[in-house]
Image 1 (tube, rainbow, N blue to C red):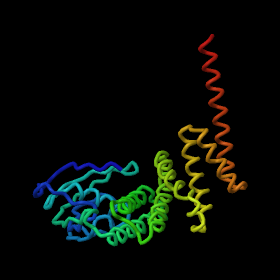
Image 2: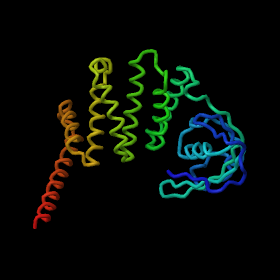
Image 3: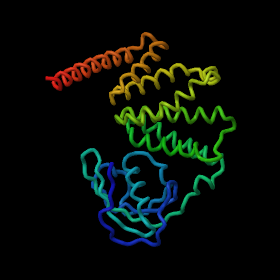
Image 4: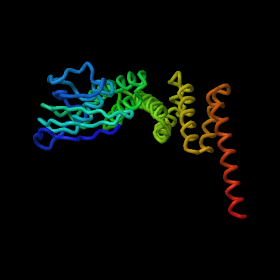
Length: 269
């Protein structure tokens, strides 16, 4: 989703912009999409950034974070081949504490809110927006000094978020994102002490290995893909999805071998 500021009608004050979780007061002056139905026009609205879900609020959040106090501006957004035009006035805002200023309890509470919003968006198939909320939760949990009452529960929260992010990236065909987050999930699940404590550890392992195998297949990393497939079938020999993926991989390997053979023959004619 590409969001650009096209016109400034009123210059704002100072150089300070709202940060991620700022409390803001704004007016929606115009929105040319049904996405904004239910949001009152030209009425002062106050809320905390990132605490609403849905495409309209994602757009508003992103636009407001580009605005100065008192600024009135128009933005153009390319979303699903649709040009959306929105006009906003940022009346006031209060900066939220940076992560290093928050207590551990505040970080965990805010991370839990972001995770819940991400999960609701994931259920609604808003994968890009869900990944963004999960990313905010993950950033909080990975920040300096952020530990749960026990290290195990803290790491489990991070692993669950990364699993959900890998699913979002899979749905978005963002292969590198799937591979990146799956790596950390597998490192966590492969710890023998963790496997004993998590009832669904094997199920999580199978899902994560399958997603990474799928991503490897999409970028033609066939050996790595087959390695993950083998591990899934060791855990679950009757896994239908993985068996289908193996057939796809074997077919693509044969196609690549034929192509390479033809290229070699043409070089030595």
